[in-house]
Structure formats: structure tokens, C-alpha cells
Amino acid sequence: MSPKDRAALGKAGVTVGEAQAKFIARNEREIHSQILSLFRLRGIWTLYDNPTKKRTGTKGAPDFLISLDGRAIAIEVKMPGQVPRPDQMDCHTLMRANGWTVVVVTSVQEVAEILKNNLTLR
Image 1 (tube, rainbow, N blue to C red):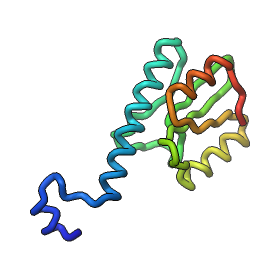
Image 2 (image 1 turned 120 degrees about the vertical axis):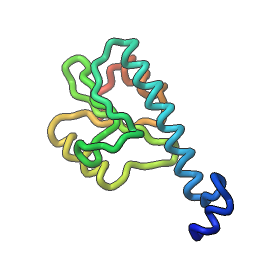
Image 3 (image 1 turned 120 degrees about the horizontal axis):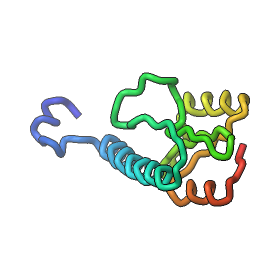
Image 4 (image 1 turned 135 degrees about the vertical axis):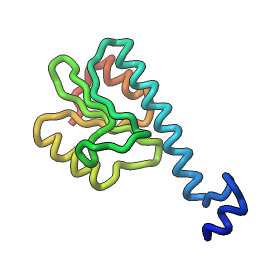
């Protein structure tokens, strides 16, 4: 779509792919918020970067880094049907090689289950 065509449509001037990307990002941010609240309620330390801000850390780093019973756990949030990007997969592989537990989740319920069962997933 040309810039001129976009301007004529105003805020509605987005492609289907762009609209879908915005939908996924908004829903992922909501899940992030719920997971962060869960960690705070349980008193679990977490390192978390706001996904709406430009990251300055390691490319592909997981969304959440936590310590649970002395174990380092990395949590990547994806919407159902989505998979980690290649740079994220590379980061996950390196982290696992260094003893991290790395999980990819699609809901706050999955995180709650991990905390409840204190699962070690590699």
C-alpha cells in the first residue's frame, strides 16, 4: 500500500499483516502483565524489560528471567501458534547449555502450573 493510499485511509490504513502483528503484540503484552503480577504476588524475583520500549540488552533474550528455588529459569511468551524467532532460539540454546531452564509459554496458566509443580523443563 502506498503512503498516499495510507494517508487517505487514516488510522485504518494498515495491511492485514500489520493489523495481525498489532493484535498479537497487544495480546502478548497483556499476558506479560498478568505473568508479572503473578510473580509479584508470589514474591518471585524477576528481570523483565518493557516490550513497548526498545531493548538494549542481548538480542533474543527471553521475556522473563526468574530465580526459583535456586534455579535460573527463562520464560519466553508467545501467542498460540507463534514460535520463537531464530535469534531467540539461538539464545535459548546457549542458555540451556549454561544450565538455565528455558520454557516457552502461551498463557499465565502455564506459568502458574510451572510455579505450582516447580517443574524443571529443559
